[in-house]
Amino acid sequence: MADNNNTKSNADSNANGNADNNTDKKAAVDAQLLNKPLNKLLDKGGAIRDGEELDAQAVSSWLRDQDIDIKGEPVVTQFSGGASNWTYRLQYGSQHEGQDLILRRPPKGTKAKSAHDMVREYTVQKALTDVYPYVPKMVALCTDKDVIGADFYIMERMEGIIPRANLPKDIELNPTQTRDLCTNVLDALIELHQVDYQDNPELVALGRGDGYCARQVAGWDKRYVKAKTPNVPSFALVRQWLNKHTPADSSTCVIHNDWRFDNVILDAENPTKVIGVLDWEMATLGDPLMDLGSALAYWIEADDNIIMQQSRRQPTHLKGMMTRDEVVEYYLKKTGLKVENWTFYEVFGLFRLAGIVQQIYYRYYHKQTSNPAFKNFWIIVQVLHAKCLKLIAKYEGEALFISHLQPHLQDMGVDTARIEKLPSSVQSVIKGILPKSYFEDSAKQAKNQNYKPFKD
Image (cartoon, rainbow, N blue to C red; front, side, top):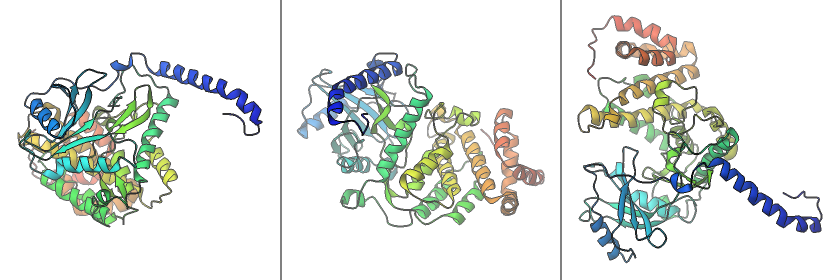
């Protein structure tokens, strides 16, 4: 950038040269980041999973009825990942002259419409089109279940890279570039939270008024209790603590409610730049700090325990990424929000994640799904419980934490007996997280109970 004290003639004479230099520098950076042709790095679909076939001809016929110009029948592939909605890529015509579309639909057998609400997801993105540059372009929404048996919507595909548990192996970011990626992902979240929604009726309709924090705590309390299986802790102390410490809403804004790196799309030519945000099915009006706390539940650092590392869904372990504490500091500084008890939001995020994981495991436990990926989800719930208790103990201090334990000693004794039945490697992780006072007091109670081991 030219120095402010340069004369206009100096600035003019250097302008073209500086532009050329900047272009050369960008090309050099891009070459450094990418070790393979771009088409090898782009996120692509794969084979369609058994039982999840799509009636592409029915979709094509419906699209033509909506006066959408498509050519022939599509090549259909399916995106992997996630335990929720099904996502397909429909490639019509040639690469340069056809249309590249994405179809989203709920899984078969879905009963709770609110959990897989395609109308809501489509409406939110369409309403954000003019005020938030990261949403894909919506094409059409279908609520006629006679077409493929469920609601679905079509959007244009955004070509780019989705950062999952690890970046593609042919992308190499140094710590500075990794920090840029981290900052850009957080800035996209902050930008969403700053969207002016009040003059947009479709966005206003998402909200239910004040009391978002209280509704979320009560709602996830009920969901967890309903989904509990015999091999996971009750979270009794955690649930009581959250209810007692629920704050008033800090503010109200549009929140994503599922903010993770694997829900963003990166520029293929500059993979530190965010160009898109996906998976809006849980978006609503709510408290931005609740959105941040929920996002940090997925934020696994390089020195976190092995169980959390094995369940990691995003590359937050890389050198150069912010720590969870640094994320909170950065967010509060950029937004100007104040917080008295950040521990509440962090504990809530972990408890909410435990509820999500447990709801999925409940289906596996009761043989409603046979997906082997869900077999050990109950172990993740155990670790999330321990992390919640550690945070509460740090917030309360040792003396107050012990006083909170007393009403739950019996419940804790069951948890302790259960932990003693875990594989030694898992025991080691959980005992390394839990406060010593928890184990010392609850172990005594466990000895006095006739506890029967659970079945995996």
